Length: 605
Image (cartoon, rainbow, N blue to C red; front, top):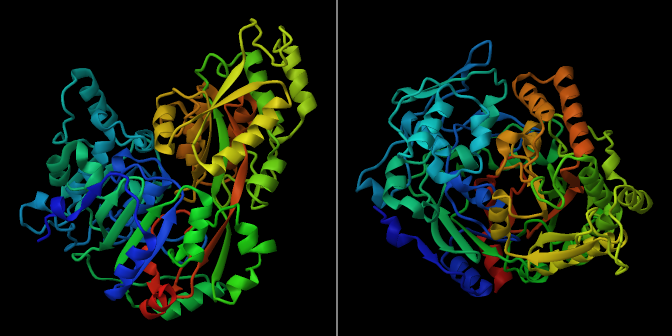
């Protein structure tokens, strides 16, 4: 039995030597995957997460009820801990899920020496946590949107009484019928509920004993039923996971499309292999682009997960692998990401917020001044395409022919709008003031790294072109996210990545149910909310597509966001890494890659 309280090393942000770590890991014969995150994690408690990088880690520790086929494109959903696909009523309001028996949590001191089997009640507890006000879950609104009968009332009772959340109170909408059977009853139809259940980075099972044992320190003590266990964590510096010794027997099974040559090769090579195929994952946090790129070139990373844009045209000029890398048998992967980057305006801010024509004109002018084509050329190094809405490529509702009036770059029109609505230079200092004569200064949040500074200079140039003063306020990314959720930032650049094939979560950014979560702009519009709720319950089809169009149009009218780009992602792997394929929606991929230990060790030596 492992006492995880002593086994997991949770340290401060300390420097570590990549090469020394690599030598130690490969000399002992373990299959070790090493790579870098460009942004620091925030923790590993699913209820607290909204950032991509923490969710990559949790998706390998926790198990959802369902999962995505690793090779199928665009997607195929399969049982994970569920014993078969769900039983669904004709109106999509009642869902019954049965669990496989004999699945166990990772060993942990919280279980007091006992092997702890996964049961239906674990999912009930885990999902109830998102409704518990104590945790202030960023993803609460996403789960609340499902409208499980009785859950909202349970949360409201805790809020009104100011007493601890009642986890033992049974509700009609989510309950364990028996030890291995879950029953969900929803107020509204939800044809895509199984896609929610397939996101293991948030909705995986957490044991109640673990939460009670660690309390507020739970982000440092993730205990799941998944393939990997956290063994070391240096905050914002280093994350190490190892194969979960109690992981159930899982084998490589996938169904790539018949015309998917790469997928067919992979399934033939790995079919039937026990998962995970590697023993250990070592992640370093390297925010600066040059050190991150050098860590790959120096063979201190096995994968360049998202080649830094400053070096992408060195690695793959014109989308082709550079000869110096091809000679070393490096492998190239390029993907149009299901993501979007954007600038958000705090709609409750006294300077840029509000719904009056003058405030809309200010935001529109700022958006028109932003030169996205220049951004793609200089900042993204040509590795992006313009975005016209929050909808992401490869998701339902995305229409590549859709054009937003705010996607244009038109400095003359931006200046004209500002002049018409009274944003003029009254004191002759070269900068415009607000209509009431008070200073107009954009407080633009940013992060203190070289790459962000490059983007900041582009934004400064854009704002200078229309006479608006901008001050950049740097803070670490997790700190900015915390401030953004609290409505304390005026303007910030951020990005989103799709977690499912449905486009509806992209519109979370405009729904009042997601204020403080995905709706960082704190946009509030009843017409949009009505559209959002209809999109939520309708099956896919023409009516739903039309509603997506109307939702995008409303965001264009009020401009709570300036959408920038959908990125083209470039990944590289050294030849000793086999089986890599970037997932389009889901986060888990480590179990499906293999490492040639001898080849890796020779390269490092």
